[in-house]
Image (cartoon, rainbow, N blue to C red; front, top):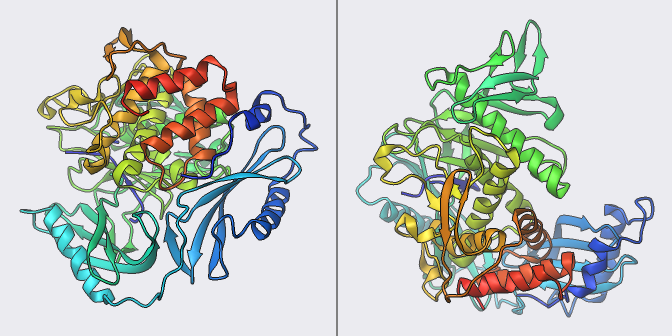
Length: 547
């Protein structure tokens, strides 16, 4: 079982051109430009357009390709980082993303590219037909759920260029969607060679989260709400209008990967602005946890990283609780920019609205707006680990005595029938029976919820160091893979380094070796290549077998 997933339809729970770290050091540590002098987003885009024209050949761009801006970051001294997606003859290029790095005056500094392979296909006309690609994907979904009855199975192929798996080639990316026997969604994305019909890759595409409220897991918590007539709506005007609604135990109806209907999110209302009873029998109690989790995640990203909202645009998302029938999952869905929570089956999992689940799932949204780490292989493990890392940091940031910070994932939602006291363990990931503590060549073949263990282990060691200690009332003990002793640099520095790496240096194809490079660059940017932090990053990666 691997509950809690990230959705890109509609999964927690459940190499580029080098840029020297020292060159960016002043951008963070020694700002020289005042806010009024710092380049704006528009200025950065203008600079980047000029750089693209001048360095097109070096970046592998041709007349057959086009680019689209995904994200823009301007450092304190005016250094600019512009992230692009790429198309080839109007087809999306998987692994075509890259990040330009510009000096404050717009001078080209370098780039990080998901692939350096030349994209030059003999044709963009497939030999394999779209219906055949759809049949192959539907078969893959059935095989992944062997023994289950699937209903309303549909598959929608989309022609793409695959630059993630060796030499670029024409491929069909097909999203297969169905419902299981309880009516809950199951999905599979299949990448198929459009010339030979050979499967290239496949992965789950569900990555697979002022009044007050009495929550299930966090005690009585503060809530910002919106007056509406004589009552209040569970909608927070101070955090982009984020709200929580009741899905009524219904699910989405999706055909050809397009949702024709979406389970409702009827906004919760309350007469006296005191929400929930602390019992799951009251439907608004789960809503309290979901809204609180959204609030704390928003606050963490804004307070610590200056990011206002999941997309960094100040706009809120929304939550749906009571989704499906005994649904053992929660997911973030890019298509609705929303979080969805199941109630759990009551035997293995309870309602999946705990704080670290919310932070985990909403971080999938942050990842989708930044590095967009591909949800398979080592990149998929890094995608999941990113959500575990920030979900944990959100929990610590909340400083809620009813749910103190620790490095257990989903400990609040597991029940006796689950067989252990958490979904995952960052200090020693293999305690869950499946996750990897140390990197080796087989890690790429694991489910992304288990290959994430290597990065989770790294993150714990970087923050807390090796050896035994008690955190949040929980005993932790993290060994190293090489027998070394690692001294931690603290959670705050872990968060800054990983966020910088995610938003500035990682790309969709980043693997574990690339993550080591990206976090070392980030540590160099923030603290200098001669700093304790840079050396600690290197030591922590070596301690989990990534060198």
